[in-house]
Amino acid sequence: MSIASVQKQPDTTARLNNIKAMIEKGKTEKAKAEANLESFTKQRNDVIAELKALGVDPENLDTEIAKLAREEEEALARAEELLRG
Image 1 (cartoon, rainbow, N blue to C red):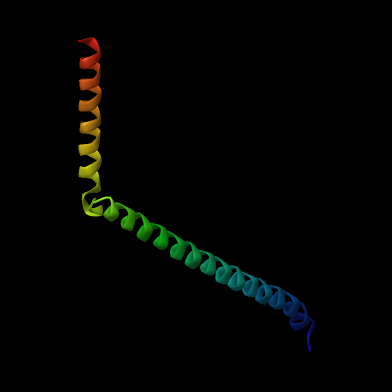
Image 2 (cartoon, rainbow, N blue to C red; image 1 turned 180 degrees about the vertical axis):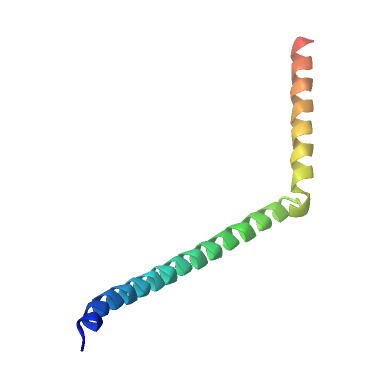
């Protein structure tokens, strides 16, 4: 065994250990991402179910929000009118 091959071995071992650590970190990050995705999917499904229970189609949510904002403004204007009268 030459001196050059002995010097390369620790460097190679360190590089391999670094790669192993990166793989393990990647596995951990993947597991976290999968858990987050599962959690967010459940939350999304829960919100969609709540909206449907309220009679709101999730596809028309922006329209429903705008409609409620108009109704709120009209109710406030009517209340102000009644209080002035």
